[in-house]
Amino acid sequence: MRYEPDLLLVNGNVITMDPAHPRATAVAVSGGRIAAVYDGRPETAETEAADVIDLKGATLIPGFHDAHNHMIGFGLTLTEVDLRVTSLDELYARIAERAETTPEGEWVVGSGYDQTKTGAHPHRDVLDRIAPGRRVWLKHTSGHMCVVNTPVLKDLGIDTEPEHVDGGRIATDADGRPTGLLEERAQELVGQLTQPFPLAALTDAVASAAGRYLGEGITSVTEAGVGGGWVGHSPVELAAYQAARDQGRLHVRVELMVAAEVLHTLGAHPGDGMELGLDLGIRTGFGDDWLRLGPMKIFTDGSLVGRTAAMSAPYAGQPDNSGYLQADAAELTARIVAAHRAGWRVAAHAIGDRAIDVALDAFAMAAEKYPRPDPRHRIEHFAASRPDQVLILPERQVMAVPQGRFATELGDGMMAAVGPERTPWLYRQRSLLDAGLVLPGSSDRPVADGAPLLGIHDMVNRRTASGAPFNAGEAVTAGEALRAYTYGSAYASKQEHVKGSIEPGKLADLTVLSEDPTAVSPDRIAGLEVVATIVDGEVRHALLPR
Ligand SMILES: [Zn+2]
Image (cartoon, rainbow, N blue to C red; front, side, top):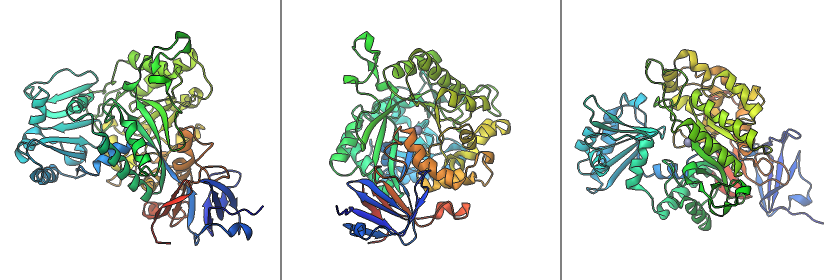
């Protein structure tokens, strides 16, 4: 029988991530799947493909997969004021400019500021002056805090004095007057005013994020929390992804983590073990290759640069501050164990080593009480981890999901927060690989720039914005970083049997790079170009017209 693939990519430097066949030169695609991988020239009959692309020596890799990003959050930032600036003056100037074109009473929303770069958090009084009559909401780059102005504080009834917030804080000045800064779960207060977002806006955010992703070679993302808590935007958030897909605007494959707050008590038979979950018993794994439910996402603590993450010893220079957990340890544990029991995978955000202990203990309890094969639970960030915690991961079958790009964007602030003795604990990669773990690639976008080539660059180079080495002993090779952003992230989604490598039968999600990241000098990785992005066998981004 004559075999004619839909698409044939020839004359490439193909990096497959298949250990049995690591390099190849050509790939055939049929019906959205990889049909064949060739060394040398394909047979003449097979070259009669509907579409042939001559890669002219360019590098073909499995499509990039960001294992932890906030897709709608990022999509929304594309319309917000960009606050990635290095001084408060510039931040205020940008807000003032946007306020001029914003009607009174409406919102001015900005994102991406970092007080370790601007010198201080913005203050409500200045915001009131430069944006009179507008509601101002400025999101910290970590996502773990925000600043609002007086009209917003008034709406919330906290303009003159704060109220207690479990797992969060309303910051005040020396006189006890709120400054506008809301930490961690205190951010949910703003959510009372802004949420739920309309589905149409969320659908547009998904689509605009997807457009950016294609240009960066991303073919899959894992969205780190929808539907509730302070990371969610609407209780019907999943519908935005489904709408984008119906409209042909999803473009990349999405795994959705569900915010822990969304799981509720179910009236199932006690023998089912499904006390906690979503209606109908829908759980991790439901969906298809385009849109699928991932783990339950639970926050155990906050952030390092904000110095809210739960550490076992105080922050550098702050003897009274060791951060805090987002809820009581027993409560967090009970929720993790119940979700595990009901069949969910669990992704626990844990930054400080004390929070990591809580997550590891909860996973141990879950496995002991309700054993199941390969649960593949995850610890998101695993940011400041003690050596003993690294060694426990493989034994407990738990993955760590660190973010490479944090080196440049947050590295200086994180090192200052933990001090030199604990700097070797920060954002490990090498010691995870050495412990036998699979390393995924992720950005936590919009916390950091999510372009995978930037992430890979930082995973290899490990430098902060100021040029200082960032725990350089944890650097990995370009080949290991590339594997993380493809196979590693597929593994973190428990989808390595369908994607993450170029092998016959797998999804035809492919990215073409101008050069081979493993062959150029490490300082050039960030400058490589994404020449084309192919999802489901279809070219959805191409730098040059074909
Ligand atoms: Zn995140």
